Length: 335
Image (cartoon, rainbow, N blue to C red; front, side, top):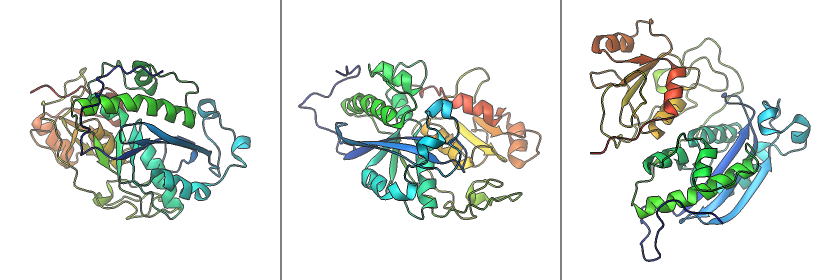
């Protein structure tokens, strides 16, 4: 029996009307983390508006390539050889997602992988919003030493049986999400919902030695994308947290800090920006005296952002350091 370690919602407490009416808790295992990597298994737990399980679904997927890190997910080429292709399961997957908020641990990654698979299949995933359980844990200020799935599971007394197995990871997340959702409802906490923007085109022809336009987030030089494959850069919702000031070396980032990016990144720019937003940071397109941090892999490039960062004394870190900092962003200071 799962023990709720958060505030329970009493029977007489009204459920927030603004909360979604249903959720699809998703986990996908993949051949890797890059743009051309593929989904090799997927699981979905469908939950009602209060987080109760309605049903679950699991499938293997033939990636039509090497399965990647078998030592992590345990799925060999022989296991996947007779599995359906993504095009074969796309309709069933859609039925599981349709009309629901996609919930995942580090949801931007799962969403990006799903969006790419649907684009390859010349279809569109029926998902309009996602909710990251890492972001929700931070909204609830859960006393976690880190934000790994196993840590969140242990906090709520959920037992993991097969880590990195999509079906068990989805089960674990569904069981941890339910008490989190109830705690949010009891405290009338804003759910950290983000928009899902589908990938509308896909090409298997690599783009080599070209630069994408600024509207595509500076994602040049990566295979698998056509110019215009991503919709133009969108206007993000305002950051709900006040700016706490500059980043200080050796200390964590804090929600509300303004972050800007300059130059090429190994992880696609839009993915990095989404991760920053989900962590509670304010993504800025320019540098000013209010900018907390500039992320660039080439601090000696002499770009306008780098020059302005020097002028204003804005701290600069590379992409790898920023990725580490994103793992443990401190909650916003209380007003």
